[in-house]
Image (cartoon, rainbow, N blue to C red; front, top):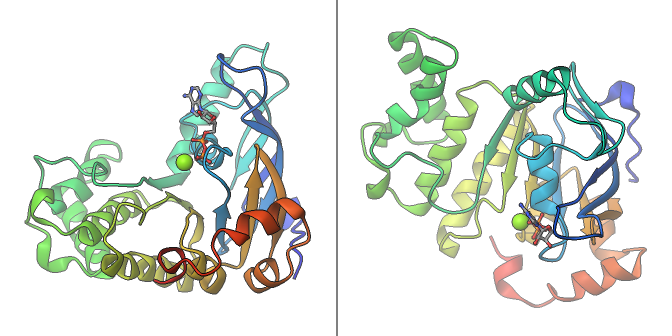
Length: 271
Ligand code: ADP
Ligand code: MG
């Protein structure tokens, strides 16, 4: 399978996305273009520093693109070039876009430590959406059940395992009813035996039709669960394809070189 989604059939459209940072002359992201359909589960792989996190942060508008175009659902954000200062329209679009996207980061600092799991999950719906408390609790409990955490709703994050923390972080993001979920190495700080329970939540969400983009080093998961895998190197999409094809018949030499690192390394392959 080669992935050629048209913009019309895609939930996420990215065209010629460029991003650089002040202290470097070369771009961190160079003309990234990709269309992702609703319900797809897409894994992003690539060497450290290639721009994976920056790409997710641009989709979530934690970073404002220098130039290019992003559409998520009906929300469009475009910038002709970096010299165009962000205007009110662009900032409004970036706020709207952020509301369409849920994001989960690596590690243990996704949750507020002084709030229970339930309070973590209900906080944004109550504050941002002004949802009444009873309704927020009901919705949150439904989501906590979905990620298998109904029994720890009243616990504090410090008492959770790493896998439970990450599932709680996913629940908190889901509580805002996002169209897209982004994960930046969500399992890389976990003990190996806890990785599977977090990946299972993503598989469950996939079967419910959630659109998800995952930056991961879990190559076996990427291969098994993704609709396709995108290989990024030096801020460019080098190649993307069905996992089985990418792993067995990569076309580009950079992809081949990168995947060689993962051959025979238990940690990256097992989940
Ligand atoms: P990856 O997630 O693939 O490891 P990143 O997107 O985090 O890569 O980073 C890509 C490049 O951009 C790296 O060289 C990194 O040092 C640089 N970079 C990322 N964020 C910033 C920032 N806020 N300021 C300056 N440079 C940054
Ligand atoms: Mg990163």
